[in-house]
Length: 136
Image 1 (cartoon, rainbow, N blue to C red):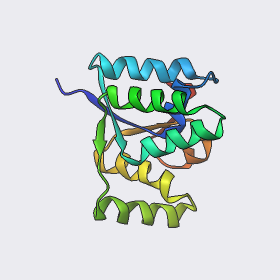
Image 2 (tube, helix red, strand yellow):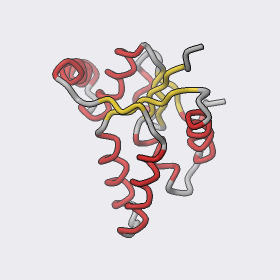
Image 3 (cartoon, rainbow, N blue to C red):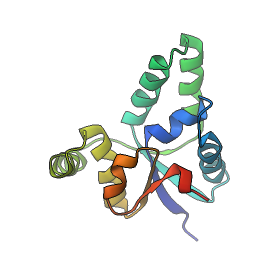
Image 4 (spheres, helix red, strand yellow):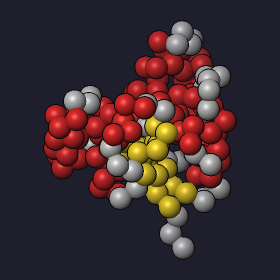
């Protein structure tokens, strides 16, 4: 049986490295990915976004590097950027007044026909977007 695919954005994975509301839900998703119940798909941009968020949360170099190492260890399905994904992300961004960054996750969700899990409530106006707090 093929594993269910889910897209997760940086707002979800930052919670793995910071004590925040719904950090336990992010851990639950990772556990299900690592035990091969689901497959988490991310754009390569996610590594930059998580590291940047941790920097602005005043983490030191060692903590950010440790988080980066753990992210690579999770063996996500990493989607490389290409013209088609970027074209779709640009279209979504302009139609919805979102950042290109956020639109990239939405584009991947549309391409894969998968649910996008986020902690960003602004993205809820897009079909097939689920808030992390609603993950069960």
